Length: 368
Image 1 (cartoon, rainbow, N blue to C red):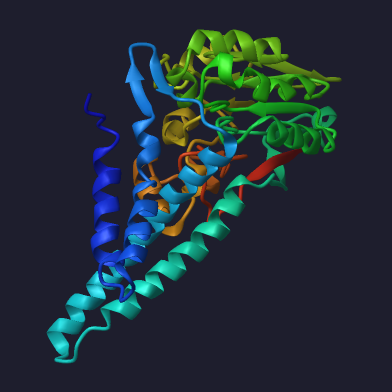
Image 2 (cartoon, rainbow, N blue to C red):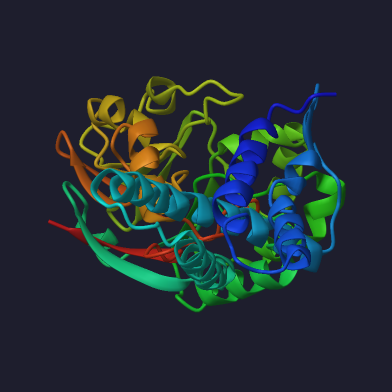
């Protein structure tokens, strides 16, 4: 059966072979080896298929999954650099009668793409550092001043990110002594039977006011109901278009969460129904593109993920266009503070980060 996910990767792979490998002045056997390696880039997509119950992917060893994902990343990095090379070729042909140094240009792309991939995949798969922000919340009571809010998002447990990675993230998060932990979606890529053990360390997360989450788009791709139940068994409490009141002494704030619209109903109005007056609202919304609507509903702080920070410079621009201009960091949206995390990890199909480190986020709330 034709897999629509394969068409574009195959075209990119073909472009890489024609524009980078063929011009090299190396033996034919070396070109064949390089072409086969290039062809392994899109091969993981052959293992991904759509079924009535969501995405299915054949189980791979971590080393094999990491290799295929790295080759896919190399293919993308090379394609971006080859576009620059080929534009340079066109300009060269227009303004110069000298022969274009195709071998050296292609060899340069090959080396730079390989170096970028090694660095980028290392950055994309390592345990993230902590990024701390002090946040003034209008209307926040004095008894909540200094509350420590840890956030994990886009954990994407899968063939590459497994139990050891999750345990390291959990240990680093607990070491922050958070008062509350937020997880705004994209826990997992895979089915419960394959990935439950890898995600299980989440049960060790510890915070006085609990661990709270909303759905991301990837939860809907794999056995959604099964993951809702399983993640709840780990002690994570779902906010599905609803809210809770977090109280310390005489001070309170509303913590609200909305479902991702990929497979659920994204309903901020419902999530904020019957909230008390003059109490600040913190909202978890996996995708930042709804923030302008949310800002009009009295939200003080929205936290989101989904974008992975853009991952690499060229992809950053595409990500910005598809997410209403929001990609990474702080934004003021109609008086509402929006923080878009670059993610705690990322989808293992493209585990590459360049100038875009992943993070465990720690907010320290301050009263004004």
